[in-house]
Amino acid sequence: MPIILAIESSCDETSAAVLDGGKVLSNIVANQTIHHEYGGVVPELASRAHQENIVPTTTLALHRAGKNLQDIEAIGITIGPGLLGSLMVGVSFAKSMAYSLGIPLIQVNHMQAHILAHFIEPPYPTFPFICLTVSGGHTQLVLVKSPYDMEIIGQTLDDAAGEAFDKCGKIFGLGYPAGPLIDKYARQNKAEIVFTEPQIPGYDFSFSGLKTAILYHVQQHKAKDPAYLQHQLGNLCASLQATIINILIKKLTKAAQDFGIRQVAIAGGVSANSGLRQALEQTGRQNGWSTHIPKFEYCTDNAAMIGIAAHYKFLIREFSSLSITPSARLPF
Ligand code: KG4
Ligand code: ZN
Image 1: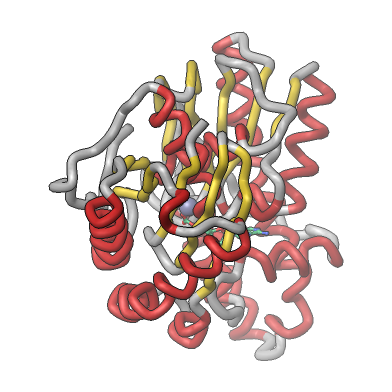
Image 2: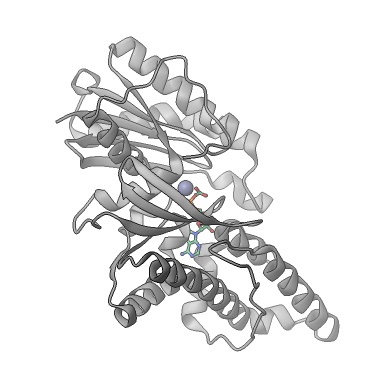
């Protein structure tokens, strides 16, 4: 069973993990706080921060795992999708490591890795299962037939669910990323505002209309009451979160029913949301599903999920050439 060093650098987190036979020995995540003041990830600053963080993060991951470079049998690396400049830092680093150590390089699709995070710790979902992958850049409903066979059956036509949290958070005057803060305020407040949900056929999603509706709502109320945001922030957060969760759970339920599948999972940064986790469990109980939610630290971007995806590829000897280049957009 292989010892794998995995690296993730697709967005604003630099992460390194060491796995032994699929078991996580270490998973270090360096967050980039520089973006907070800009209200979103600044790609150039993200690449520079990855360059600064990648060596110390990897060194710490090896140290915490009690391993040295000679113990590593393969390097797992995120090849995309993500920010090109950020991906390039990780991919160049991983390629040089694989070359200098004379070990295989294994490229991993970031979105598939979010799904395979479910196989880091038992109980694992059984195949086939439906996974709702919700992150800052993607919202996908995926039919997962095996670790090697996944089919996207629905996705967002515009903004991702995480983007909806972050962009509406910006309207509310919250810093980036707003998702965790909205979650916190939503837990402490009641949702009293009803926002119209989009009517999109099939399994696809849309969140840009909701963002516009919230912008107009806030502008109209602020015109009458300049302190509106201050005293209604909790209500706004709870109402926004409830609307996003409703949209997500409805499509997830439709997909599970239409495909006749009772193994249902969520993944990606937004699956850290306490309201979504609760809603999935409740809907699961009502429908007799077996529900799967990754441990909190494996929801947002991390290298352990890249490591488990690389582990599965190692088992079938699916290695990558040292001439691979990252892709900002990458289909399954
Ligand atoms: O998967 P991820 O870490 O990075 C991407 O691949 O995009 O997801 C980041 C997204 C951000 O939009 C962030 O606001 C959102 O996940 N997020 C949350 C929560 N924690 C992170 N959204 C809602 N509630 C949370 N607790
Ligand atoms: Zn992600």
